[in-house]
Image (cartoon, rainbow, N blue to C red; front, side):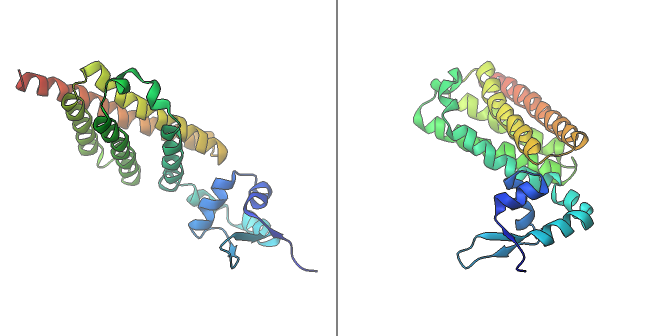
Length: 208
């Protein structure tokens, strides 16, 4: 009897996780996967069941924060592209050039967080200061007051947190692991916000 082949979505159903999680495991080389000539992922049911039984450790490693953050960043980009920025009062004050700069500035926050997670917080202080300085100086350059500067940062921070919750829920991450990530995000971004406000005050004093 020929062994049953499964699509990515079928494999996700067998393993009880979201399809994006199966894609992540496959791309990291943890989950046994085969590619068709057309480049589509295919899975043997027997291999999946055997893997699920014998590779719980590999499964946990595949869900390490660094890997999950890649999925989170993809989700954040989708959120930002859905027009939510247009509803923000601080964003409405910006010209086209400034809007492009703010959309691009989201990358520094996400990359900084990924560095923070990957280094287990060892680079936290310098990363937080640099990102806070970037947001403060950009706000000053485009004539946003310190309240709007904080609102702009919090918009991107909240989009990041929402994406973490969505991705972690879809991947069935254990509650303890998810809580650890939320704590890391808030600790890191709180430091950024403090740096932003301190830098804004310094820049305001220097330019008087």
